[in-house]
Amino acid sequence: MRKFYLMKTGLYRYAAFFGLILPFLPFLIWQQDAYVRLHDTLEGELVWLEVLRQSGLAFDYSADATLPNILGGLPRNTYPPGHSLPYLFVHAFGMFWGYVFMSFCLSLIGFLGMRSWVKQTYPQAAPELAWAAALLFSWIPFFPTFGAAVMGLPWLWISFRRLHRQQAKPLDLAIWFLFPFTASFIWTAILLSVAWGFLLLAQFRKSLNFQPLLWGSAFAWGLGVLLAHYPSFALMFSGFESHRQEYLPYPDGAPDVISQFHSFFQMAFFSHYHVGTLVTLPILLLLLLAWPYFHKRSKFTALILLLVLLFQGFYPSLEYLFFQHIDVIRSMRLDRISTLFPLLWLILLVDSSVAIWNQIAYRRLAILVWASLFLVTGLGNDQNLQNLRIALHKDIMPSYRSYVAADQMKKIQWFIGKPLDSYRVASLGLSPSIAQYNRFYTIDGLQSQYPLKQKHRLGNISVAEFKKSEPCRRYFQNWGNRAYLFSAELGCGFQAIHQGKGKRGQVQNLEWNHAAMHEAGLNYLLSAVLLPPSNSYRHLRSFHNGDSWWTIHLYEIQPL
Image (cartoon, rainbow, N blue to C red; front, side, top):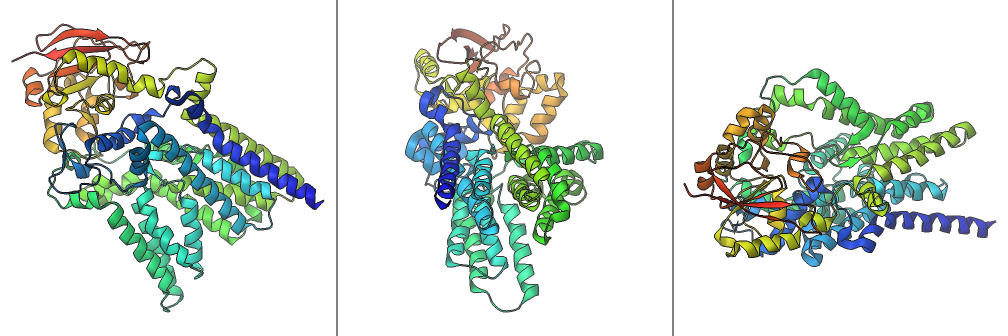
């Protein structure tokens, strides 16, 4: 009997590790012909790391260090720190393999963390529960460029529980100190600040006895934040005039309450796309069935989830009433705690399954819920889905190789025939990150921080187009992270910069300010769509390449 139990345990272990590796097989088989997520990855954040690697300035945090090839010149400290985990992967392995290895390592961290949480919380539970929870958590779509902001949370949750119970270990010092080096400051600082505030207050109320490891862990985390994200703090006190000074989240007055209710229910049923997408409705149904059997800890976890959902859903009203005139809070935003959603939902799924497991009818339902979550989570990951499409020869999105279009861009550089630092380009119909990856000097780009004066220069080019499209004007002027050149006919959504082969975007009337183009330093335009004739620019040549998703039309900006 024991032999059979060990065989069954081994089978679950091997199946779980195979499931962990499964999403990464397309990268091993097709390599750069596999699909890599575009949103907040190839469109921006991942390319930032590659641009930093190319610049040689990754570890230069001096005030005068400048990246001259982005947006007419950016302070180096507007980019991620060189000693962060995501950058170190790209530095060591290049952009593609750095992304693949980083994604796998982060998934492994989440896998092992969730398994450890289940084993410690339910030591008598069937072994398959821990392996299933570990695998499901590792499958949740997340953004590797934000580091361990999602996948590292199970380890912090375990440490947090030890600290709260006054059972801290020296290991906790290392966990809290190292975590900021592995995770995005924006997506973790607010959440963990609130967590530490709660923990220290709870300990103060329980006892006035000094807890060295508790306070030491809090200090270790604070020190880790300062050291890991030093470039951001250095930029903050450098006098840098950021485009975020004009960030205006509520130009029309008080935010609509109905839309906030919609946001609340959307997050309640589908988690949150930006940090980890999980269809939560099956978990919610199981949670309601298990509620009468829950113990106090599970109910407290559900209460935390509800409070976070309410805060996230109705944050616009809170910000509008109290924070919109505080520049730091307005630009950084306090609603950055949605990283907690995937972990909380998975914890409640495990709690619910354990609570009703001894009831045969409910056990069958729990198994059905788990099966549906594996299916939806696996195929709900756009990276997995697109790679499955490639396997079935039904692909509709570009592979990594066809998106970055390295060979095509080399042909354009050869055709122009000038040193790359002697001219500036902009992009239309394709993301400026492609030109930046291929070492062009650009006046445009997707950036979280860039000079306010450059925003004004770019905005002056598209003034007439903004008059034709109020959504585009608001998109740029009130937010502005996508510092692009706009066409009212292409719009400002996802399709505006994804006019690859087979797309039908057209520009028949483009009104750009010629003088503003020269003021911004623009010499050439890389366009994925043909443009109407104009005295402002001249069509030089169209570039086609079988390995590229793009047809790129090269235009030269004419003299004034």
